[in-house]
Length: 541
Image (cartoon, rainbow, N blue to C red; front, side, top):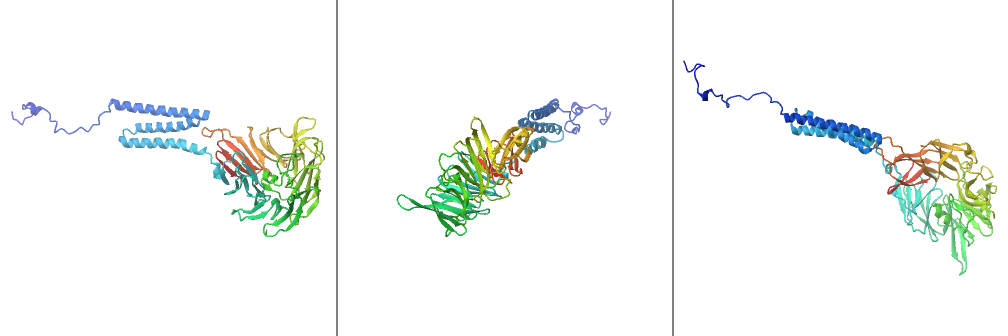
């Protein structure tokens, strides 16, 4: 038998298969049992995460819990990442697979959380503020005058003053004992130190301009004419006093000068509650100090005659005596009534008789415009403003507090609204009242303004049935009402803030604010100062 024959016998070494020459097998090995278990566990984890995300989302929206709503978005992203990590195991290597899964998890979490957060984010009030200053504190006061973009005067407790306008906040250095006031038209800033008066023009572009310094204390500033009282010692026991008028556009020489009595007496502050029967006569500058505004009508008290109105251009008395020297009267200068055809400023007097009955009289250019009948006797405080008189107190014999109004409409004193509100929907809150109007919240969910004298409904706005708070100052109403949360990520304790021009009912600012509103002040031209946190902002049209 040939050695080449396939049936020829071989040695054991030859018969054994050669491992070195055998080609590698191309078959894919079956997955190990532990690999299949890992995939199953990963899928289970993804399902659990997605289930927890759904539960968190449902509970978050039901109980309005923002934390659960955000947790749902994060859990959904994590579940999507784990699922991607499992499904991509046969197709990608370990490192790329983890990057893709992590990116997907992050993208899903952001997509489910960021838009919801941004949609419920509240814009800071500072973004829409006309001016922004340090928060008002205890003892700080706010003063303003009517007029478009008229300046707002803030007087700090330490005596420092600030002038606010759109985009401006100007510091006026002053001591606590000094008087700082605006002119009634907002064109001048007056600063009184002792017996010296400094007057600076105000412009919308540059704020306070070059100062004019004059001797004396101011009685009034009408247009460009200021009336000053100046006294000098005539001898050791007497003073020589005079009144002078100066044109502030050419103040080198007085327009006129007349003698004045040594006894100085000032008017009462407009728009401020004062006792109807004063315990002592007000000082020359008490009204300007209280209101931050220098009156436009010069009024002089003569111990022999009483109160007289002066012509600022000549210094001569105008019309008749406004109130006798022996009468117990409150006297002030105000703007016209809201329904009056004439636009001249008025002089209001409120005189008390021995029993406490009040008689109010309105004068224009020294002549009587209207006079009221005597009010019921009682103990009253009076607020003179907007050409009308609002008295608050207790009528004799009743023991109950009440309010009565004297106005151009009728001689008799009446309750605010003159009975016209008896048929109106019952009020649940009152934001405020002045001589021109009162702003109420009624049971029908409305914010309503009525004329104080005759009860005419001047405007109506919607209001929630939840408690509404606010104020009415300087012909501006500010309303704050709680905002009902309907979404889990909306801030808690948010309030809707509306600033309203009380003369027209126009809403000049409307926003939702989070956090505690520490204080609101209405100022002229439908604007408001709102204190939130450590800042106070000027809001308006």
